[in-house]
Image (cartoon, rainbow, N blue to C red; front, side, top):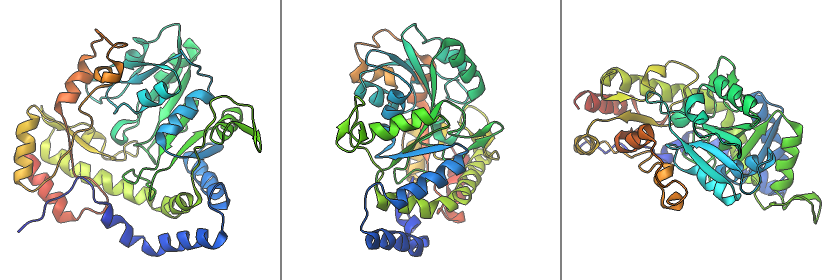
Length: 368
């Protein structure tokens, strides 16, 4: 009997890396240093180099990274932040926690990514930042967004939670805006064994503000001078794990691209298509999630389930339809994001999938 194929399976990742992970954990245990120590410093240096920026600051998780980045570029309570409405609500959560006002924007109907035109439609005189999410592992077209933000005098923040290792003609995800954020949640392309995040930037002043914000707003021990500081630090165990895993990222991303390329070939480019299937051969795409657009999601989910293929939806509720924004976004229509919430469907994609599993999913997609 054929087994069900999960959307992701973290149990398969660790055995192949067991020796490296055990060595990393034992190194931390032997050091007796568990927070803001040598592992964190080493990871910050290596990760910054991999992104192509001067500074990396490890923090507790990706949502904290977004909040601290927004504060570090000068956002203050009451300021507005423009964000894609179809990216899971994470920027909205971070903005609200910082006392900011989220301004959800529509997205491109083909890529489902924020564009300069859709962002511009939500800019006001109170806007202080635009957050562009490299959704599903696909680099957005950042150059026009950067020009828009420069003209408007607002910061451009990259949300790279789903795009670690993506690289386009201008550089890597995380090197294209004023500041960028990463999540190292275990399912991410570069995942920890728990929560973790980072803020990266080429601006030393922004980096220093994040360092202070992540530790109570201290400028020296027990002396808080920066408002809105908190405890948000990447611990030594997670930093050591990430340091051990970082060299494997290019290979894992290549495998993800190959999987999505197989699905793209199976589906073609019609009404039912992989959202970023045409980019599966490009290093600008790292296949964090294999997402298709379905004209009949319920029927497709039933058919795939019958074939033993599990699915998920990323994401079923656009930001402006979230109850937390019910009043602020009343009457706002974002038709592309709304349609995406009704039609996107996630199928299995993780580096440890077997070739036979990829063939099974591809065949099931071709039969839809």
